[in-house]
Image (cartoon, rainbow, N blue to C red; front, side, top):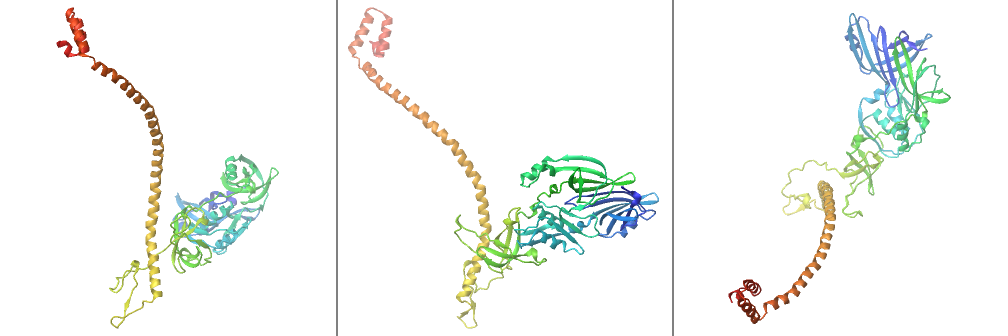
Length: 512
């Protein structure tokens, strides 16, 4: 049967009476307990002063003279309030996995042959008294793993998400016990009622889209009210199907604490992929340990506090002048400082991009020294006038090589700016080409119209040529004809005829 309030017992904090309790726990999250209790006639400052950082707290359920752990973890918040003559306290506690979610770290795991299980075991093993269970098909990492601005809990949760494996901490163990994967804890349910059932088709579509082999029965879930207590990841039979407890929740209803569980098929309990977005665009400094071709082993500065194998071969991005790789080529040497750059959310895309000039500021050069970046070789004067020492060819070559490397380092920002400008110019060039593409058809249409106008102009000119002889003939009409027309008009005294003659033969005829 379910627990009554009077059946609960709390250790880690002295209380008179437990008033209410709420507990929830699911994969990928810390177990959470919120408990309200009556402290009696205590000063409300007393529980605050008595509770230290990370103090352990355990809630038991008593039945038939036996005590069973319902929740175990650490106190994360405590609030006290005066209620007349008594003091009420509200306690917030989280499962032991909370200890792994406090301090953010930065380090790398360069051994790509390390398995996911070994990575979990190594990190969990850093906590005294902790243990872990690997509950999935273990495989090698296959690429460098980097923990950056992440707690151990966040890092392991992200790493396992690549395999869709959930991470959770037992809520009924009195120490840190991590489950990497889905456990199967045999249990029997005493069902009071089935609260709800559902089938999440959006979840099914999501997993199928990213290539996970999942069926529609894997996204069917049930919420059930129990009259007994079973832990997270309990394996039980319900409606002739083998199901697993994906989530638990304890609620106080009246004076009784009931457990509600969410059931689902084990194959449907998955963790969505998480990517290290805080790592994208980040560059770490390191020291070259070994060089082979265009690859190198590097000890990263973030690993100084976490000794390990510097065994990953980082590809070095060598500047070149053409797409076929030709151009100037300068690999860093052992002992040189370089930058390691993460361009995307995939850590396997990491590259070493440049050498780091970590020399101290140059001191004022003596008069007998020329500038190294101008290719000059320093010459030391001996005590004997006119002689010099310390200028063998090998030393000259070393200095020139150092100067060349320095020039490359100084040139790199200019090269990067040039590439940036090129990226800005390219859209303008594309727009210009687009406009040219629109102008060209218009020009072709203009030429076509010109081709049609030209024949019309030619025909006009031809007509003009034909009219010209007629005009010339009119102008060449003999004077005798003009005189005759005028004489006839006058003889008959016809003014109309005179005007006609004037119109044809001009002012001369009118005068006549």
